[in-house]
Image (cartoon, rainbow, N blue to C red; front, side):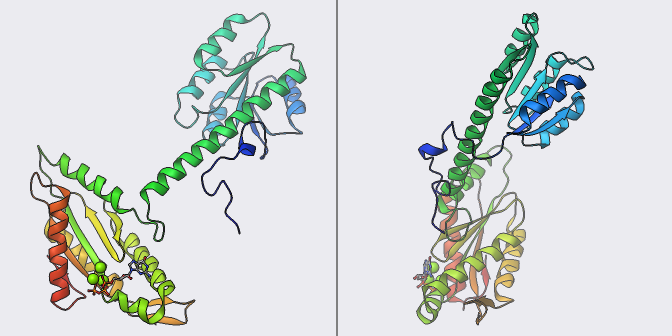
Length: 321
Ligand code: GH3
Ligand code: MG
Ligand code: MG
Ligand code: MG
């Protein structure tokens, strides 16, 4: 399959407002059965419409429902519809949800109050169905377009901090993270431990089985590391076949325990590559160190690297602290 503009996080002209490429979802809130059915009739054909007459139920739906628009009747009597507008605007999960109100043409007070609360648009009663359809469409399209922009933005943020081959964090992100942790250490000092792992004789894997098998080993290696570090730890691909794990609030003894566990996670079971036709015994060497007060990331990394090279000299497949 060829990559599409969306995969690449690029917005092409045809993605812009004006193209409804996914059925819009409308949450209509009206506790008058008669006018609710009129709304359903207007929307049914073009949208997935959910009608709700209770404020708390409407909020539950809005929070979980992934709607593109809330249509709220200002004539609701069972609750204060302005309060519903205000709740939708303030709740984290719903603040991006556009609101369109339906207001009596004599009720400019509630019309204005709604707009003050962040209502996006309104239609006056008696409702002109064509006007309602057009204003609805505009809101739904804008919401869908914004969702796409937001998604692409998050995706590009993710790409910027991630290593493409392994999905682990990249070196730049780890270094920033580490420096942030170290700078926090100041007043009530808390140690940060760090380990560097390097795959043993990795060049031989490439030379013997080819670069693709090498890549496959790197992916599986990363997956084993990623799965077995603790929630507070951060694993990154530091370079070619070198990986770093940053461990906040961790002393040297605990960090050495983590390193030993990771070493066994790698050496304990062969790597299955080439669609399961080949099993490779992979080992790695690990250097561990702990931060000193007021230390910067570069000296910490250098010390871990020295421990790593000691592990290599000592015969590989081991942890040196
Ligand atoms: P040692 O036990 O001393 O670490 O030996 P080694 O062979 O692992 O060390 P060396 O640093 O000589 O070789 C690392 C190799 O990793 C060299 C390079 O071709 C390979 N490599 C680096 N990045 C990648 C990658 O993204 N994919 C593949 N397949 N190989 C890579
Ligand atoms: Mg290396
Ligand atoms: Mg090397
Ligand atoms: Mg190596």
